[in-house]
Image (cartoon, rainbow, N blue to C red):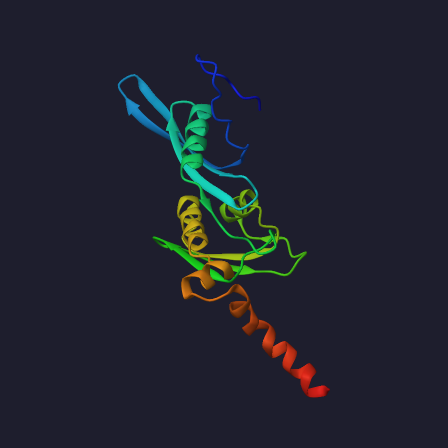
Length: 189
C-alpha cells in the first residue's frame, strides 16, 4: 500500500500488514417493541496474519456487515503473538480454559494438518499453524471455545523464552531432548 502524506508534506506511517479474517459465528437477537420486533446481530470474528499473530473480537449492530466490521476492528486491537515451531506447529502440548470451556492442543508431526473443530480451526488457520491436534471438552459455545484456545496459546513458550527465563542458553534447554537419542548410538560403538 502506498504511503500517504499529511498536510506538511511529511510521511505518515504505513498501513498495518494485511490480516486475514474468518467469521466464526453470527447471532441474531430480537427485541419485541410496541410496533413489532427489532432485530440486532452479533458477530464473532478471528483475525490473523498467518505468521504467528492472532486475535478475536465481537461486534454488535443492527446490520450484519456493520457487526462484522466492528468485530474485525476489535480483533485487530486485541492481537497476541504466539511462537511457532518451524513456523508450522506448536512448541509443546497445552490446555486452555475459559468458563466451562476446556481445550487440549497438541503438537503434531509434519503432514498431519489441522485436526480441530469449528472455532478452534479458525484460530489455528488465522495463526498460521499447519499441523496440530486439538480437542474441545466442555462448553460448545464458540465464544468460550475461542477464549479457551487463546488462553492456552498465551501460555505457550518457546525454547528461547524458557532459556531467557532460566538464565541459560537455548542449546542447554534443547540438549536434554537430544541426549537420550544419542546414548544408544554411543553404546553400540
